[in-house]
Length: 573
Image 1 (tube, rainbow, N blue to C red):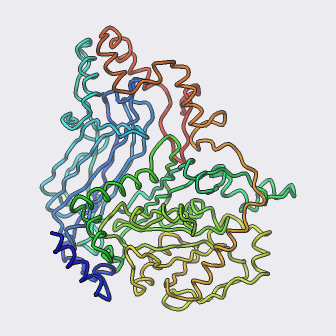
Image 2: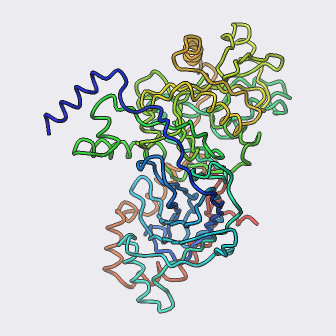
Image 3: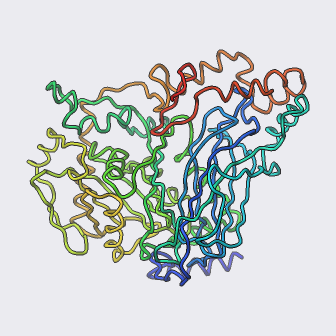
């Protein structure tokens, strides 16, 4: 084994171009498929995942598998995740997932229900698998309000279902089986390329926050989403009153972003990881002891950065619209702070990105391997930055979409510092490249990348640049130098959870809850579960139908843009 690995290492060293990078494999031929709209309506009678609240924080992940041939077997199936509904045993998502080119031979849809439990592992509440052997334009499907599917308990949390069983023993009317309501209908025939299955909609976003990492790395963001646009809004109160809108309130936070773009991804955007060292292949393939450990560690890092918790913001927007462009600019904080971002785009058009930098910590968290969650094949990866444009200034561009603009002069930089253009995409430029050592996208795909980004973000001036372009490297160096000068006009505030009320941060709220709960609040879930099982009389009062209805009565459902209703506020109409 050692000799084999040594031989492979020597071969890679002698190769001028290691395996990986751009893959020209064409999309397999396939007959026309169908566009199917799946709707995840609601679930009922879920088991209790959190003993302290007597409820769960349920969400659903769906994986779609078909008989459609893939370009390579290592490609992952299409996946979708709903938002999390807080403190509920009867969650209502009402979320759609529209997928194109589902073949006539049907599909398999596997839905897994979880109780979100950050920073612990999410508890599995069961799963539902739907098989359809054939579909057509006349396929009846199951129309809204959806068909009820029984949730299989075999893969669920034993602790959660042990409590469910104890509850059922005291209340004969309480069933052990949870139900999931899903509808699926054919919208029509899909457009080519027919061999490529992809997400049509909805276009949505998630914003993930890590305050501790932000403080460790010195990353600052605006205190909330409203502050992202305030300085760029010509109708803002600060500008009307003549106050200095340059002075902004910020917080320490590390922000990771996910934004679903409307497919299909251009066929040329297809890249495999570059195996420039044998250990890289072991990592991506999860082969051998070392490869398995590294792969697991990388998945853990991905889950830590793209964590879902109370502070996670979620929302939807109209695909291929100025609303989409504006949402993207908000997530990138417009041109504020001279930020540089690392990004990857998956084969299904999901774009993930975070701020990057030469600092060791930020660069470590911005590796493309982490962003892709060690996916073997992706569409594209690299870095991008946002630049402010003057209304009367038009930057030149070659026919291939590569940047031919000169670097901003000192005069234009000074003007951009004091003149904040309105929050409209026409005033900004996206400069995006292929600077990624992990996947090494070929510069020949840059025109396709530009076309894809321009289609998804209309109004935004999209410019692509090769990573080996000296002018582009100068532009990025200028951006880094600008970043070093920031931070003089910043007022710091306590880093509050974006989804919490204005009175307390999520951390303070959690500490207050623990203090109010006394010794019980310091016990683990397993300890509390054993304690309740040792005293069966407590189960009837805490987990009976009344307790479940009380848990569901609280307006704790996560709302778009990360807004959560407080327990004392009335439910929204």
